[in-house]
Image (cartoon, rainbow over all chains, first blue to last red; front, side, top):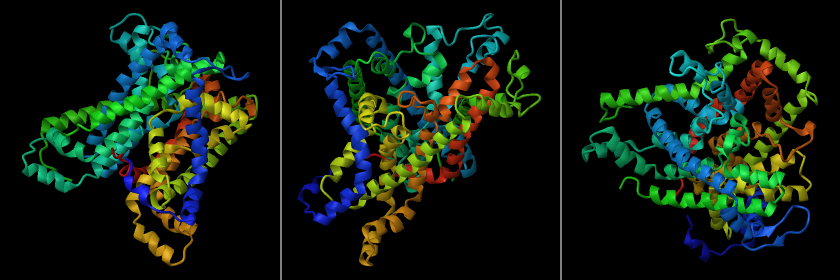
Length: 302
Length: 281
């Protein structure tokens, strides 16, 4: 991503002023609301801070407490990882496959299908309708269908029985997750050089699956990487969307994630140092996941 | 377009997949639209139905009644959401485009480093910055004002990233040089040459920004009732129990129609932008 030639260039005063002049309005907001908060968060994670008195340095004790004494944090960590590891890749592949199939339809049908699949990710509170679909009495769709077919004779507690909660949550998250990566993939598929396919056919590519793996995917690697970044960012932030359906805290903390733990310590208990340690761990997880995924994507088409 | 290498079996399989997924994506939306048109007797029926037998607009009328019963006049919530969305989106598009222009077409020290920092910032979710952001906002006196939602949106990295990638692909440096030789100022080049040529990119920024801001429900940053948003009051109506289920569906339909309309009108532009969204390793 970095270009090395930058170092040798000489700049005039005017170039510097114009450049930073154009950049400044955005850069100030970016620094104030993204860069500085990250730095402050990491620094505060080594402190005790309640928001009123001055922070006092406590070394690693927040982290020690997190990993050794806070069972709820470990629960939140494992739930967050479970969601990220399941919903992340699943939604990524769903985006990819849907985009692939959609891109072969004629333009009008393609536009309609794009709208249909993308709409859930932008339509705000509609996901709350899942509380009706999985309602725990017989008016809920899932229960009504199962009871009508005679598969069960009493309603299933979809939203409060930890046995089912994860799966319902997974469904809701997938429903809302066909976002920017999905659009980026469609665009990627639509913009592949046709001559590559002809060349491939001559070289012995014999079916669409080979074509996908050897020709299409390698030539849209940049989109694949962008999509991965978007999916990871989304899959680690799972939490708030579940509260409207399962309540917070959910039964037995079955869907309690790091985002919940973070806001609990930050907003309710006012232990901002401790909450910052949680934020820092979450931050590290997201960056780490990105590194791993970039390594994996480098292998596509080999 | 016709392509080689297509087996019938594979086509049927993929078609079925689209059908199943299409149903999965559409069902909740159809259900909520159906419910918004149902009377009370039809809302609670066993087995439940999707489409109402006797469609009625009663829920939409009741919505205005429910609105009259809110703590502050309903138009207030709507106004707040509209202000946040319009101001935030405009600022996001203009600031983002300016910065994209600088990073893409101007020469100054540190530009590559700043861009790679921005790409890094795409990799994490805003939840991790929530606490320090709150502290910063309270020091700036922004807590409990609409600025608390608008200003952070102006530093949105995703819009900037997409605009910059698109600019790189679609605007040749020679075009800018020609304009500069004709005596155009740097702002003139940006406003009259670059901006009209990156319309797809700012349409995309508008979509992403409208979608995020229209649905924003800032329960920590804003506590005064008269500064709360539509999304918040929608949650309140939904939470007020079964008797309001129809009204709540009507509000939801109204809320979802805005971002969806924006997408319907911008889809082609958005796909053009996304074609340039790729990330180099």
